[in-house]
Image: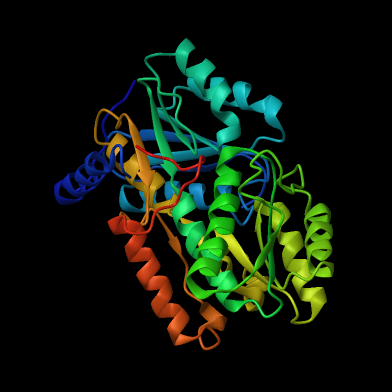
Length: 362
């Protein structure tokens, strides 16, 4: 298996240092490919997408952007992706890339964890990485995010901005990479209530009942996403955070139909970049640096032996965060902005603690 391609020495040292420091801390729906154009030995990085396609406005799209950025920095890297129509395609898609001889294979999403573990165990010499999960296998690099921290900020923001005193959150599927957002959001609202004496209610998730919650049972069903969001609005919610990939676009349609009485907080990416049609409804977005962490992994892997262990994105290492307020910047009070900065710093220095069973640690 090829393990080398050219990269400027300074860049190579920077990428390798970043990944070593972070271990334990930090189109359309058809197969796509990028050709290597440099003069060195090529390195082929392959990506198995989750459902929703490469242009899902969420984790697939952002993860693939990491591949394209890596290729831009090192033209000797070849990149390719395969979409998954449903979960039955994870294993065959992963195995097909093993057979093809990819130098590293990246799986997108925690739903692929069991399939990744099975294929990795059967191919111990093959390099893998998995986003939102880590099998613990020596040949699988885990890329994870402690999004409970950033979602806590999102909940605090929602509690500070609501006019009705009711906010909501719902998910695509009841899996840890989704519920971690919902739990953090609800606990951020609770913290605001404790600190400010407010009584903001959260629809869709109760931290005291982690087995409950509202879900569309899909990452692609926009009609279900719109229906859930409209139900929340009918119950008084004026700010909703969907955690559902492409299905979350249904919340955008609901906000648009509401004519200004309903606003949103997006997740994974800055919604004003990935779902720009609905930017006017996004107060902010709870983000994880999918693009940057995937890019850095591929660049480091192309330099030699791929990184091992687990990267965990946090507020401290900028692996997760709160996106700009964009069109809402003038509407977010300066006092609330200051409080958000203080809460963020408190989470980083440990003076603000988040007790969540979904928290991800290195």
